[in-house]
Amino acid sequence: MATDLKGLESFKNKLQKYSSINRKFTNQVAEEVAKRGEQIAREEYAGLSKVNVTHETMGSGMSRVVAEREGLAYIEFG
Image (tube, one colour):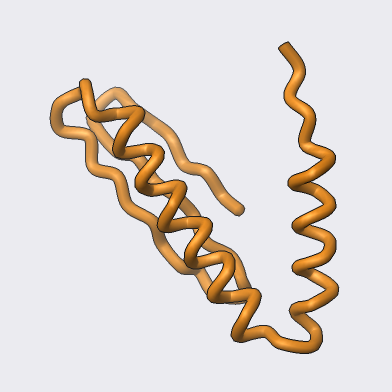
């Protein structure tokens, strides 16, 4: 099944345009999205033991969600 990402792309483009006006706000949005992504990942991996899920702020409005465990490789950038 294909995923329709048009809405997300539109949101991203609007946020990028707004970042030239208010970088602090767009960084806050990225941080909140990453926090929510971390919550979702924790729920998804709840049935697996020893999975460490975190989110990291990388600067320039970039954040990532990381799930780590031996034999598991997952990093979502955004």
